[in-house]
Image (tube, rainbow over all chains, first blue to last red; front, side, top):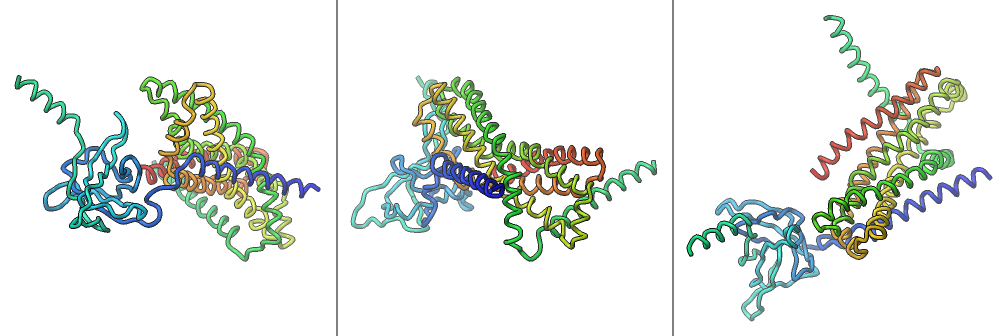
Length: 155
Length: 258
């Protein structure tokens, strides 16, 4: 009788623990990350990446399609080179697409915004290892204030 | 002067000897032919003592810590108009830090001290020697099930702690202070990553489980078989495992999130 009671209580213990794990998995954490599963790699060069970090999201119109996986400096022209992994669910962006570094909200994190370009007969799609050539850099607040002051002084 | 060097040398050698003895004890207890039929009932029994009986204190502490986190976080976040960030703040601090660490500290106080006192008293009343007389290895019969029970139950307790804490934070933040219900969960979900946050917290609690249970078992197994000896061993278990958990937590955090 005693042993049965103990076994039952251990069973309750393990069940509660599994319920907690399920709660954390379903309700708290996001596991539907676009970088799980099959991905392909795209590169983009920017003049300035601002506060972009590894693991920052890559979004198309607000939908997360991938993540930034590496940020290095191009050896030849000393430009930041950003490596992104895009889920293969989102294949076939035209190579006229452009990438910009944007900020979500006033104080939010920075992310790469991908803007699909036009599609034409002589436009290829972006494949694994391709470069996005049209890029817009992050807005640096200090430069913006500098430009503003400069334009004020011209009046 | 020479006496000073002698003291330092003796303390160093004793520390190294202690670490060696503890390692040998653990290896001898765990390495060997698995005996599932004989060991399983013992493991269940220890899971009850170590895990089930620690559940209540873990659940209640988790609930209150989550509620306090939400209350404290809200008063600061509301100044910036960023109450939506309450969800991720509560969830991340629980999953990454407080869940594993506070569970390990409570576990050391609740279960670790009990393990030390129990094994120390077995040593004092010659129960361990009687087992050896009957050709039963006390390391495998007494130490191993307790170690596995601690190793299994601590991560489970840490998950419960975090889950209940997040619910406590939800209760205070949403039901009482009026943070938006949908924003609380969705912003939390957007910033908590299963692998980076939940699994790293799980690895932390596995490491703490090994350290706390190991220290408790070693201190009990080598306790002086007298009343002051057992009392000192129990105190040392709580002090050493708390210090080890807090120190290791810094190292692990630096490796995982630094």
